[in-house]
Length: 157
Image 1 (tube, rainbow, N blue to C red):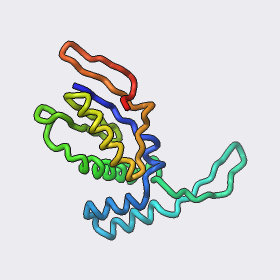
Image 2 (image 1 turned 180 degrees about the horizontal axis):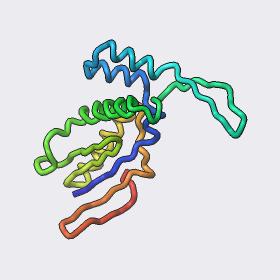
Image 3 (image 1 turned 90 degrees about the horizontal axis):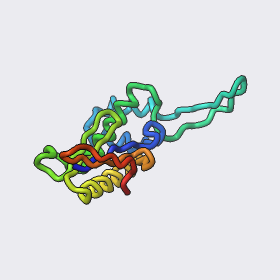
Image 4 (image 1 turned 180 degrees about the vertical axis):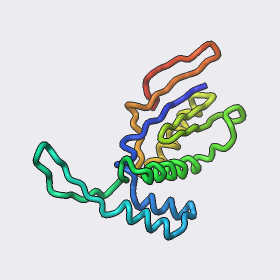
C-alpha cells in the first residue's frame, strides 16, 4: 500500500473567496446563509503592530479568518467539493486508490505507486482551481508492506 500524507499551504490565507461563494451555491446552501457568509468574509482589513507602532489598515483580499469556527467549516466544504470531483467512492479493498480526510489532514492511499501519483496530480489540479496549494515540502510518502512500514519521509512528485 502506498500512502501520501498531504499538507496544504496556508489554507486559511489562500482560499479564493469567489470560489467559496460558488461552491456554497453548488452545495445548494440557502441564499440567505450564503449572503451572511459573504458579508463575513469580504471587506476584511488588517494591520501590523510591532511594539508600539501600528501600520495603516490594509485590505485582505483572499482567505478567511483564522480561528473562526466558520472558517473551518468553509474549508471543509471546499475540500469536500474538491474531493468529490475526484470520484473515489468505495473502499480501498475494492479500489486501486482511495482518499481519507479529517479536518485539513488528507491521506491518499493506493495499491500501486502509479495510481498514487495519478490521484495526487488529480487532487493537486482540483485544489489549485480553488487556490489551495499543496505544500510539497511537508507532504510525505510512505509504503506499507506486510512486514512493516517503509517511511521514505520525502514527497513524491
